[in-house]
Image (cartoon, rainbow, N blue to C red):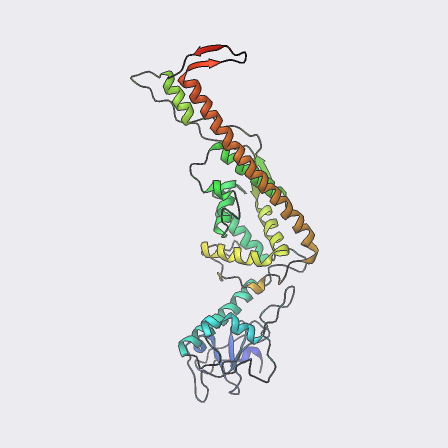
Length: 385
């Protein structure tokens, strides 16, 4: 029978290759659709406990044995192949599947309840459908797949609040925070999540992020960070006193200007970052992307204008291991980033020390009093207060 000729034995729904078909391994010529299978709608003599296999998208069947303990069976394990043909194709055994679904399916040596069987079947079908939707994210030419490129564009557009085509440091930090990074893992978050961060702190963030971007390198451009002007000095009894000006200067110190010190990441730069992780650390990228999709469940596909159909990207859609040819490059980049983090921490401590010294000197000048010059002569200095 042709694949297009199958139909569900319960509801008579046609089952073309684009739909999941659950085929019983015990009852001959017994097929059901995913809906009837999950709700355990059956026709005798078939029962819900029979072994079955799932066909979808002309791919090798996904086989599930419900009543056979793989550790006690004398038959060889039947591989579960759910990865599309191409780079990163994997084969997972029945025992691996049992490990993956143990929390849902329970002990395979015991007869599971109908509710657990329903949840397990639903999980299997959802994983198969998600993998079929996303496919392999890395092409044989070591580029992002078309759907991954569209996902990257959607992520970039979400965080590019002003639609400028670049991400400000704060916007990129928000992306990293939504991806599950902590301030210890990504130090700029210590500043970007601090609403009272000083201009000096923000310049330190810019310097760290610029060095981090260049370590890959990622496509970006540089700009000069601008700060809003401070509020005017409030007059007292219709006039502005010298002490008011001094206190205002302490509260709102003049923001330093660092020409071309602010890095702006482009969409190409974000694609390059994801490609780097695909090649060097696919396991980490799998975790980060799924964390991000959980935080942004309504991201829209730029091609269709509708939300992406699957909110989970299975691990099998990523390369199984890092690209061996990229290991040395990864080692050099990580070494550079460790040195950069050390410089960042030292610069932060120095900036805090300098700021404290400036405040102490300003308070000393404001209070006035007797001073000693470089020749040892004492003199009196008028204060502002």
